[in-house]
Image (cartoon, rainbow, N blue to C red; front, side, top):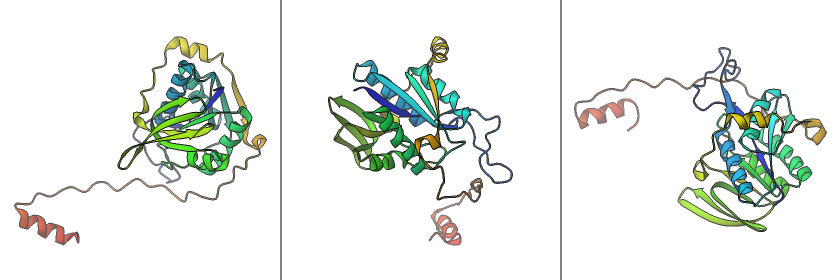
Length: 249
């Protein structure tokens, strides 16, 4: 295999408590630690392991957004990716636009495998990989917990509601990964220094022939209601009465 394409999205770090802006216009990001989406980090780790086994020659990481996403791409390069591409979109895009961008890049780069996180922890859409496969006309394997390559095919173990499912797909293909696939490596200081010398290309979204218009608009944001204080009942009869009072029985 010549090339693997991996998507990296910039999101609020999973250890950070998310806060809604006072005007309800979105999530507060000023002064907040931002990181690679955890599922995307797992996707990159798997691509690097495939390359280290000699089953791929190059790993290219891609991010869509503003110049601030360079930080996440540099982290991806420090982990071991060979090249990085930043599609300048001025900000986040919807899943369909993201899929169209990856379609153009997959064709340009002649990618034989596109590995994405199953979803991003900020919007939880879980749509981009599936849309890309449909637009590309190639097989998809979602929620992967194990990937085995065998020449022109890939054997994927998927996590489904009833357990595990194993399928085989022809390459090129789109794979989205789940948490149990691997544990991403730690980035070391020498690797961070080396990453500064690796190529990071900027491509305007217009140069890909993709429109950034969206068919959806966000009307407002609000935090979830605070959990109500519980009550203590003396016996089963008291529990039943309390449930009836709340209209739950």
